[in-house]
Image (cartoon, rainbow over all chains, first blue to last red; front, side, top):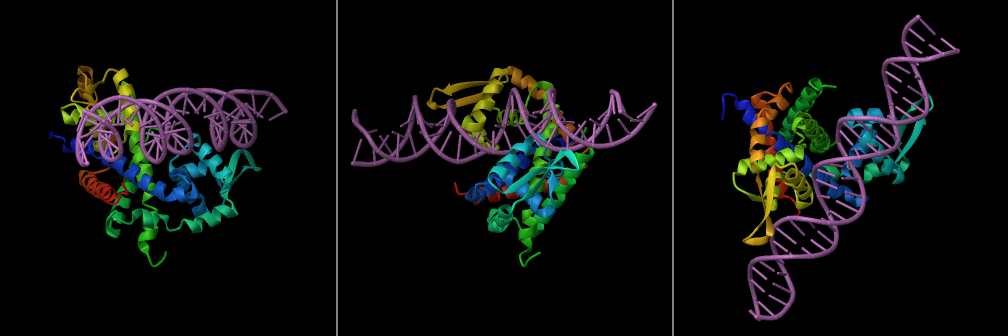
Length: 149
Length: 149
DNA sequence: CACAACTCTATTGTGCACAATCTATTTGCG
DNA sequence: CGCAAATAGATTGTGCACAATAGAGTTGTG
């Protein structure tokens, strides 16, 4: 379109990314509604399940790229639902340690098939998924590296 | 991890997609704050600028994959800011036609460099951007095709 | 030990997303 | 024509995202 072809394409990359992320989130949300979880609540549980040790709010935020303003209410709802336990770190009272409850561990098994069900029918082959993941990781790395913070 | 390698990978594709979309949105938002626009307001303007004719709320929603519950308040804020005009379609009073005002057209030129500035520094080369766009379009198509609606 | 700077989480306020519902309007069909 | 079904948009309610700020707690330095 101009002497800078990257401009036109980049202008149109943000929209598919935005729409695809919401589309995938919507699909997960539908499946997760069976157990009363929202998508952000689900990915928070994923972070805790993966860790196998209690995480601070900040550590969860690093893994999900979310800040405390988002996580605090999410964690409170997960606590009300009985899926996580929160307690102040006695070694540093500024920190709050979060871990799954036994009920949270049971939840893990009961919704283990959600990812497979969510991606089924999207027509995304394994090789394409790998390539997509590679490009997204590269983009995330680039965003972090050039972030003002 | 199991006999179904796609499961493990798919489980980990939703998170980079989710984080990358928010990261890109955040970067656009920083640049757009100079003119007082949010990212959803910006993509709504993009849809109207691209169309060159008045669009109904539903037509904007098709292009952005957003519904009226999201678009109505966005359009009202854009109207308050003086960037778009809304009017009922006299041929079908159920419909609302939306188009940029002259000030909205001036805005187009004043923020034309935002996409280039947003993507600068992400380290995403043109070929990777093209491939990413192809995969996202494929995913979006797959999501639409297998959606319950 | 005092205390300023720093760190971590929580709170507040604005603006999306989206499901569910409502209202006004239009369109079919008998 | 008469009216049920369909359609378009707006409204309502819940739950994120995130910037800005607050406030409790910790640490480094003299």
